Image (tube, rainbow, N blue to C red; front, side, top):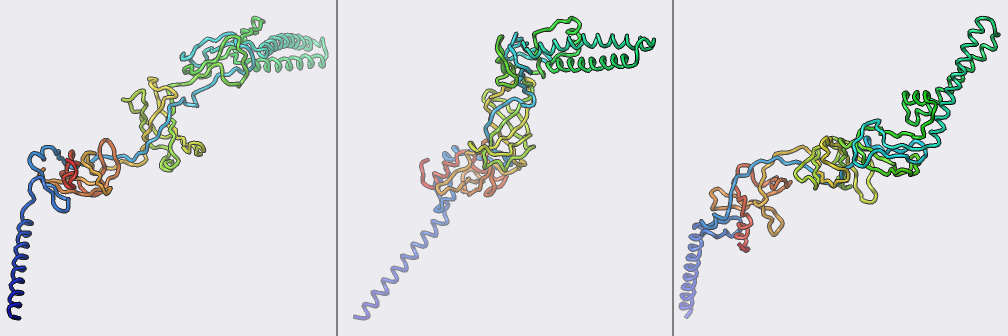
Length: 392
């Protein structure tokens, strides 16, 4: 009986060993065979396409592209404050006439408006009186000098006449200076003295060449020096400021001299290039942004103050790196980024990559593939879906 049991156990063991050998042989044969077209390897890192599937995939070489380290900001266009002037009246008075209108081009010294000023009338009257006094004193001094030479008057009378002339001359110079403060030129002052008649119109002229950017002048309007709004504002619009408002977190990356590209919605096909010329020393406590300023020469007057602008500021030197089109990079379910590398357009290997900057529809590749390797530049998501059993 015991012998029969041993024989049964030996037969069962032999059958088990033979079955295991057959299974291992089948696995070994299956491993030696390449995966059929349209299938994936067990590790999901390889995909083999059929002829029909390969037609949906576009491949191309990885090539170097130049990438720029930049940061973006928003802002606006403004007048150059060094060339934008509110033209106030120097003395209180009522506007007599306004000569120019909003948008008019003016040159330095051109009359903008006239004003009736009591102070100006008083200065003119004082000038005419001072001129008359000086003429009289000068005549007396000349006569005294002649009489003193003939010993017809004593030295005291002569010196008195000379002193009176000197005092009158000082008063005349002061009176001329007083009307000059109102903007009268030397020739206009001489003309006023010659006609012995005061002119009630105080002439206010443009201090610079530019364009009228604001007008608040109207005949009869009482104006006070320095009280806003000014009757006129003039700006040289050939030079403008780009004002960008950068975030507080990004502000350490900016410094004067950095290049920037500016675009405005009104001129979508234009890119204006400039450099940072100034940065604010403080952070705006309300917006937590820092003002960055650049300058632009705009002789064609294409830009207007107040336009919204988008800024791309170059914060570092450009670098050349391998680049892959956006459609060639796939974000996998675990958050990694991958590309599919091939040598024949049929067999693809999934390669995890590290990306950097994204510019001009390309991803910068920091690690994972090298320039010259061939990848799926379009249809990479299709390959990933095949690999992981997703929709195709």
